[in-house]
Image (cartoon, rainbow over all chains, first blue to last red; front, side, top):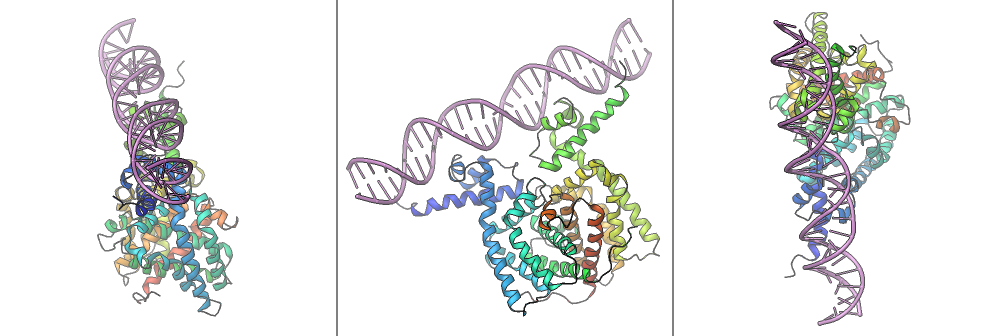
Length: 223
Length: 223
DNA sequence: GTTGAAATTCAACGGTTGTTGAAATTATGC
DNA sequence: GCATAATTTCAACAACCGTTGAATTTCAAC
């Protein structure tokens, strides 16, 4: 017997990451046991600890794995977007550069990426980790997008742009979460797992949201 | 001794609800133990179970308590909004009617309401409960707001309105979550606990997002 | 094939979880 | 004041948690 040799070594690390990714996304950090992860991955209970250390480090490893891929893809899209528009890109094209890596090729078809997106939704809305982890893994790249947006709308205050990005982030991550609520609310009219449809709507909605801050009117009186 | 009589009976029920609300919002359902809740509420470990049954029922009770208050306030605002505009209110006024109950009077000052909002953010983005609980507690009222929005924009397809509400919901709940991420991302320019500022920006952003679907152009080609 | 390192299994540890039944306390109706 | 019910306390249950050290197996180098 020499079949599962060179393959199974690496396979087990990624099998653990895949299983942890799926479970964490579905039930949250505390809702998942190492025993459930190990069983899903088809490995011994002690193996996750052997490869990744304590549970919290495994969680970080899951987050880190695809964050690097996503950040690199986003930066490439942003560079191309800026280059192809003589230095001052449109708001819509910046948003498209921000969203496009999320639905290219394997990202829409592979279940692993969908699980990862749902996990991001969980982390982004968690008071426990949202501040720390999102800042650590994603905000360096986000800042470059904000810089580009400021360049695209130089007359808009920075505060307004940060708020607008915040709303974009919320809309995006709720769509990631795949709760199925929109589907039932709309009586089946909308399918939240149709990422292409979701993002086309999101681009229109958020682009208009950003652009509205060009008009100088400050705060209206509430009520 | 006859001081803690009529008072403490009711107080213990609400003390448990308050403590559970705070803990669930901060750490999620599985991140909280009944012992932590009981300790925070200053009651015996067995008391939560005595009043509310198993842990899951306590969670539902926490959600239900303020949901009824919020739903009633929203319906009142919607009625007033429709009545004061001769039957066809503006999109902006509908959104304001939807958001205004969140920052009236005690809701901004009481910490209990802020905890509840953070809990909603957790539930709304949870694949585990987002579909079931949000639909159960909030969607009947949401449907009435959608009806009003359809009336305000009769030329827009229902699908587009449902998507737009979905993005509004995501933006709103992320703001609820109070992760502090926006604060650090903006270098202190934005304070996410300033609900008045948050909602004034949210009204502008989301109103523009809804209105953009009036323009008949369908899906643009991505890329 | 032998040797040393890496990978995997196994069993168990101390600690914590939600839940519960029985006892003790307090309030309520007569 | 007494009996009845509601409330609160206490102790403990069985089940499960993350983690680990030792034993076992598999691998790689010579």
